[in-house]
Image (cartoon, rainbow, N blue to C red; front, side, top):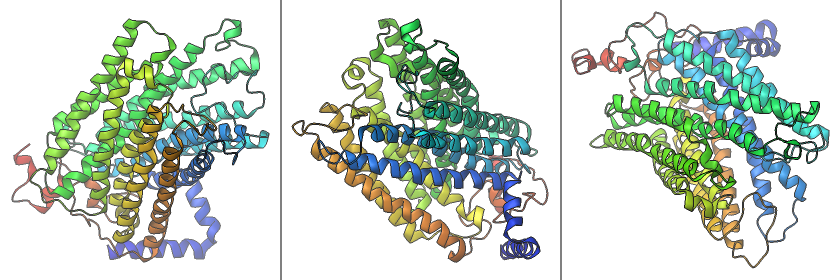
Length: 553
C-alpha cells in the first residue's frame, strides 16, 4: 500500500513539475482509463446533485406556508422541471454508471472496458447533454413542463421559447451517452471476464450492472424516439402529440413511461448489487442463495419492462388493461421479496460489523422495504384512482428512489472509497451523515404520504390555509433542511479524508472480490497479471488455501 501511495504521489509531482496543472487537465480530459472516467462521472453527478438539491430546497421553502409568495409561479414550475430532470438524468444514472465504470473491469479481472474511447464519448455526451439542458436559462427561463413533459405542454402553444427544445436536445444527447455506456457494460461483462469466471461466478454488482445495461438498451430508444417527435412537432409542424390536429397525448405517455418505469429499476438494480457485495463482507458469510438472487435480478429486469401503464390508470384505459398492468406490477414484488429474504438470510447468524457501509446498507433495507410496500398499494388500481397525482405519489416515488438508490449508493461509496483513493473515510463523520440523512429523509418524505391522503395534489405552487396541509408541509421542509448538512458532511469527508484520512491498505475490509486483489488506488493496468478464478470468492481462496470455496460450489 505504501508503495502504491508513493507511486501516486511521485507521478503527480512529475506531471506537475513537467508541465504544470495544464498537463493534469489534459490528462483527465483526454483519458480513456475506465477508472478516471468513472471518477469523472461521479464528480459530475455530485455537482448536479448540489444543483438539484438547491432547487428542491427552494421549492420546499415556497410550500412552507399557505398562500406564500416566496417564488413566482412560473419560477416554481421551472424549478420542479429542472429538479426532476437533473436528479433522474444527470445524478441518478450517471453516478451509478460511474461507479460501474470504475468497478466492473476490476471485479471481473479485466484491464479496461471493452471500448475505452466509446466509454469516454459516453461521459462527454452526458455532460454536454446536462449543459444543454441548463443552457435553457439563457433563453429567459428554463422549461416549465415537468420532467415527464406531458403532451401537449411541450407544444409551441404552451411552451413558446427555445427552452423546451434545449431540454429535449439535452436529453437526446445524454441518452446517446447512456446507450453507449450500456453497450459497453454488456460487451465488457460478457466478453472480458478473466479465466475461470463463468456467469455463475461473477460478482453480484457486475451481475446487476449487466441487467441494468439490458434495461438501458430497451428503455432509452423509445424515449429518444419520443424526444425526436417532440422536436418535429415544435419545429417542423408535425402533430404527433398535438391533440388539436389529430395527435395523441396518450402516445407520449406510453412512450415516456415505457422508459420511465424501467428507469426506476435502472436506478435501483445497481444499488441492489452494491448491497449484495457489502452485506456478506460485513456479516462474514457468503451471499445466501446466489442463484436465486441472480434469477430474481433477471426477473425484475424483464417484468419491469411490461408494467409501464400502471402510471396511466386514470387516463381511461380499458378494464382489461388496468387488470393486466395491476397484476404485472404486483408480480415485481415476488423477485424483490426473494432478494430481501436472501439478504436477511445472509445476515442471520453472521458476525455483523456496523461500519459505515453496513450502516447505510441497513438504511437501504428498511427504507426501500417501506417504499416497496407503498408501491404495492399504488399498483392496486382502485387505490391508485383515489391518490393518483397526489402528494402520496411524490412521497412514494422519493421514498423508493432515495431510500433505495441513495442509501445503497452511499453504502457503496463508503465501501469502495478506500480502493479509489487509498485512504479511509472518517468513520465519525460518516456516522453523523447517516443519522442526519435518515432523520431528514423520514421527516421529508413521510409527511408527503399524509398530505397526499388529505388531498394535496402534486406540482401545485401554493395552497389555501384551511386544508390541514400546513403542518405536514412544514415538517417536510424541516426534514429537507436537516438533510442539507448530511450531504455537506459527505463532501467534507471525501475531501478531508483524501488528504488526511488514514492509509487504507489494499484490502481494508478483508473482502473477497478481485478489486481488492490489486493496490489502492489500482494502477493504470489494474493487475500485474491476469488472475484465474475458481469460485465466487477468489480472495477467500487465496487467503484460505486450506479451505477454498470451490470445494463447496
